[in-house]
Image 1 (cartoon, rainbow, N blue to C red):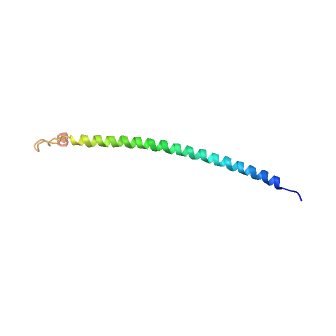
Image 2: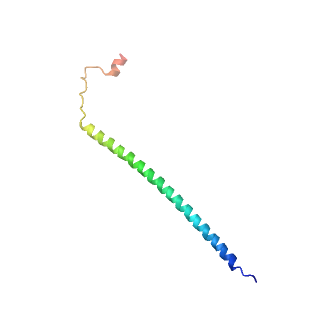
Length: 84
């Protein structure tokens, strides 16, 4: 009977190399996904900060709004003037 131990060890070594290659590939993919996620989160945080500033501006601007009185009832509305 032939000794196949060396063949099995060679096959095991090939499988170990394939496992290392697959692990390295997955690590690279994970890093790429994390980088994409970080870029997207950064972009969204920038947009959120801009919206927050606009909301603050609107709040401050609304505090300074001057209300105008409605015209007297004796004056016709724009719609009435257009019909006439």
